[in-house]
Length: 360
Ligand SMILES: [Zn+2]
Ligand SMILES: [Zn+2]
Image (tube, rainbow, N blue to C red; front, side, top):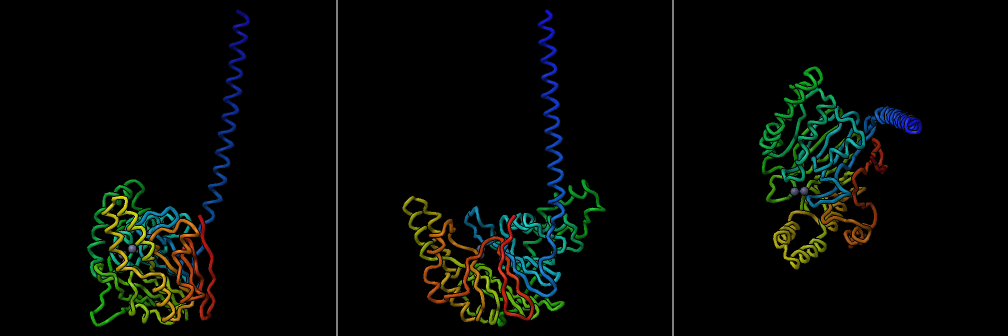
């Protein structure tokens, strides 16, 4: 009996020791978590561009095809304390958040066209910038038809907006800046460009490009203090874009390798996936090949051509080399494959381009 009592006693002490160790581990874990959280919260990225530079950040360099390494199409252009996002592809907003870009100062979104891969995260970008404290409604510039897209997004998010205001309070989340505001960019048939925005030395020009039947489709040119960047949007090789991009420093251009897409189509046909094969057959008509993008870049005199919206996916070095085959013969220098996080800094009134890459 005494032994039994002793055993229970020792068992109780053992449990007590285990409980104390677990408690200490838990509190140590919580202490570490708190320290990490404090450090992480203190690392909000300062503004992307100084008053003396134009900056381009690739937020998504993929296409509608699923790619673990590339978000859907999106780019950010910053000039001084303003920045705009061009298109909002799948997972591009998550990239921005992982890179700790402060979205409360987002100046607007420029939509190139209404294919789903370019508008997928308009709602998410609006929500995240609103929650971050954006103080004015978020303007979304785009071709005629943008009003319908924005009305739809605002309706789809109406429940969510109401829940969040109820939960967090109207002093934190202001309802009058919750919705997206459509700004239609019209371009008379005889014109090929239209100025969208001009203030404090930054000028944004919409450029008509060729992406039929997605029509009209635009690219955008940004000029700031003697530097410029052109985002092509989705387009076949287009002389209008080439003219409007004349003298640009950086040309970010859509690219599809027709030989690789043809090989994909044949593989799909052979495996009986005729629906996917039909889509592969159709898409080369409205995207430029890497060689065509290089020719356009040469004709504009662009210092740097950055390929984006890669079709097909490029999972390894061999695929990337195949994608670029024939390009070097046309443009030996000043070509690169864009990756999510690539950031290009263009100091004012110079010819320098600094390239870095943001990582989460
Ligand atoms: Zn498209
Ligand atoms: Zn696209």
